[in-house]
Length: 89
Image 1 (cartoon, rainbow, N blue to C red):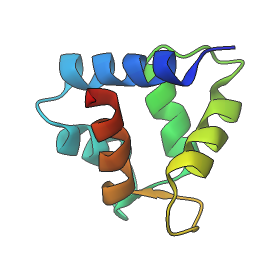
Image 2: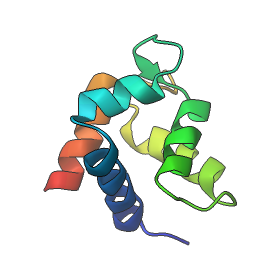
Image 3: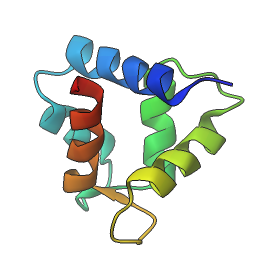
Image 4: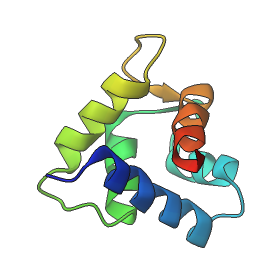
């Protein structure tokens, strides 16, 4: 199983290579424009970050559990930014 650090590192690589800013990445993956990333939107982000298809669903659930501070089972911009800040530490 991939470690949290490996997953966050792959997400960081994706964001820095393909997007100008983390805000651009968030907006790109927020397909319905509601200001929140759903599990399916996070799965697409993980696919772009080259996370194996077998574990994407599990990882997306764990990311939501780990960063969803308001309990709505979605990742909003502030929660996404928290994950990005953890990557950059």
